[in-house]
Image (cartoon, rainbow, N blue to C red; front, side, top):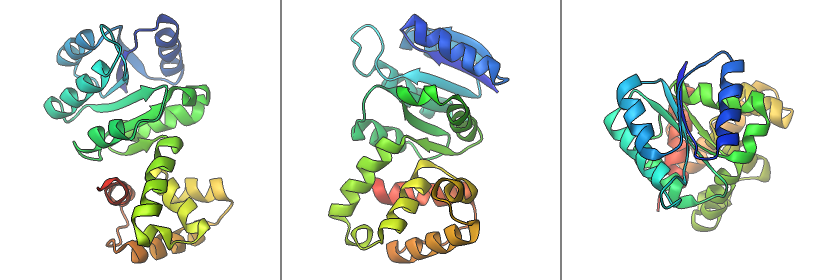
Length: 216
């Protein structure tokens, strides 16, 4: 996997380089601002871009805006944005461009290197990775505004959240100490409750759930 890293804090940028290289991936550029990132993407055409949301010069949302531009202009390039804090607007803006090849993770997740690399690889492969804290905000909001979500059992809400994070049945089962068969049954009941058509494809299943939770 060929990756571009965009992070203005040198220590974090170097750390990401080490994590990705040790994970067997090729870092084709590591830059410190959004303009350098978009230039590098045009030049290198990477498989994945990992970028901080807040970048120079104003340290507001330059990284996010550049990520949205990359998603529009280079749809074959996956994008994962990193943030210090949860902002539902950031997730909504990213997902407005589609639920494929996109991730929104909090920086604290980098510490769990194995899971972090799995998330990046899933996104580069066409999937989605949403931080558990981001999903918690989405599910919490839906629980109060959508009767169907509020009517799910606590276990079904747990499964729903893990589906929205982008996890596979096997991963959900391992997390909740359930068999894959039990996870499939929970997912089937969730889909029935939310009125979503069943789909065996993991990526499309995740996308449908995210679309449901992210609607106004």
